[in-house]
Length: 285
Length: 238
Image (cartoon, rainbow over all chains, first blue to last red; front, side, top):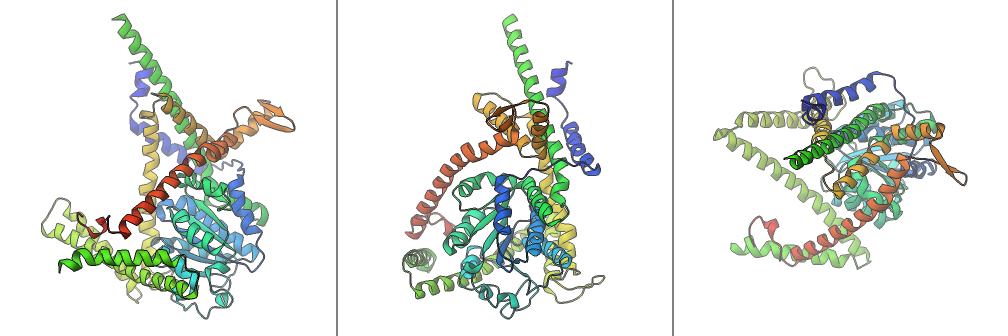
């Protein structure tokens, strides 16, 4: 059996083993690959960084545990960014699995920066209704979320003394795994209420939001784990925040991507060799 | 009785559709108040829809258990897990071994979410990486011009979207595998720049067209639902 046939018929378990090694080895070794932020991710960072101290922003974390490796790091970085700048974030989610993930992030970051719930931030949690929730917030935030995630009434919270409606937010950041960016937040919150917006999305869905970024409807667009790592770098360079999980995962992702590219190239070379051989055999016979 | 099954839902859909469409063009306070009221009702109705989904799930799995259809053992696990998770979230008690209740960080519900659901759901999604690698090796073949273009684009974007792409560019520039135009230096294979061009030019253009098509289809579908032409939401044939 020649090399071409061996490669083309390679047992998939060998491929799985190589992928597993490409993930595990870089995570164990202290590999550091420099990260260069793209203009799209810089747009999100600059939009939030330009806000004055005391501004209110809305962070919508619409993702589930399946997208946790890509999007939870950028939630941590965004919260660290807000707390370092003295910006007051409100956290909501339109996905039922969102609150559990947000709870870990907000409690960790709030404890690190000594922030008080109800005064420096508010964790509103989840409500059914998706679009109805956004429309309700446009009218009154405290009527739509009359209690926060922990069951405390929102009407008397210090953070809501001046903040009543969605249009009073200075920025909306949607950290999304689904299509809430262009079907919910962008048309009904950002465009209708005239609030600037940015998005941090999974790599798979990032491609469909470039038209909105180019039109200026999205001030920035951070896609995938690389986008999260770029945001962590920007926050780390300016405010000294240590790198998070996205930066640590970049080496592993790089190795896996390189392996997939190499396997496509090698497999296609072997495929063309095999086709050439079959053509020659047909001519000979 | 047939009137309430067939005509009444269509009348409600028509009335609500026309009212909410007309409301958008009436810039008065009463119109805005109507929208807020609609949003409140919608939240309540969706909550009931979630309850309906829950009852439907219980009915499906219970009938599977009762009739002992293949895989009914998994139905026991589904219903049991659902009951445990629901009780942990609803009951205002401290479970044995946990300091907190319900939503608190030390509660059983939070522990089960962070230590069972999150790892399991993340693992299921992570398995895709292995399937993708296997598919890339065994099935991605440049059999036609389009397939070749797709593969070349995929390789450029895969390298350009990881830090290795930036590291390669730096190495090429340091190794003089680059050219200069004016004051700017460009590497011969600048994967990040090529990726940026691919995403911002052909990709954005294509998705602009796709999004326009989707939105036009949604408008057409909405008009059909409002006027009662499309009745699949009623769960049967027209």
